[in-house]
Image (cartoon, rainbow over all chains, first blue to last red; front, side, top):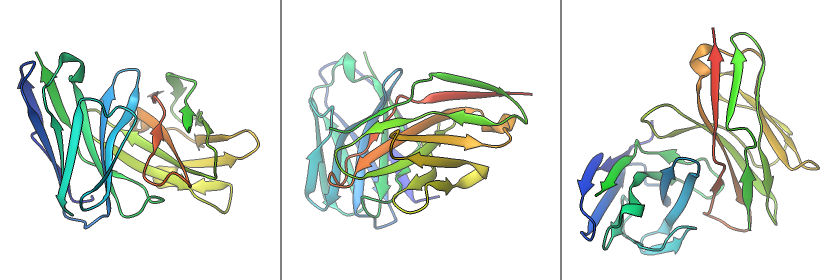
Length: 112
Length: 114
């Protein structure tokens, strides 16, 4: 399996608090992605990165920010969490855009 | 804009029978197409991809998929289903002019009954 680790794996927090999820890879892949998975919606892209400090928005980026200061780490931040952001968040990596993505095991985030 | 449709939320087949999970797509450029499988409480796992070349693509665990440009389809198939194939399957598309942004279908739950 590709070396990709998400932390934390589970988190419960309250509305209005900041939350940061971390994705760490050991594969030196160029591309990193954050998705959310909700019933009936499949996977939806939040943000992705195509290199250190190079990021772009996905289809559901409102309320989320990202940072990539090192090749191996991609952080997803919810500045002020809302209940609508309760979801399962997946990080993925790929060496190039035309290559398959390898996924972490997800972070289950509950916002009360 | 690119999009993917998986018209069936659920597919049920008997063990040993052939299975098909359907996927149609829409892109403005040439498509990169992927199938992934997800087991409970796990991330998605790559099964197969089509970038260019032969329309019939073979992948992991005996799965294959046929790219049909005229019908804009990329159906996943397996000649003989196993109970262990029961899982959630996702089709994904990426436009070759839209590097980095993949669009996933909503997923199809495959149940294989003994």
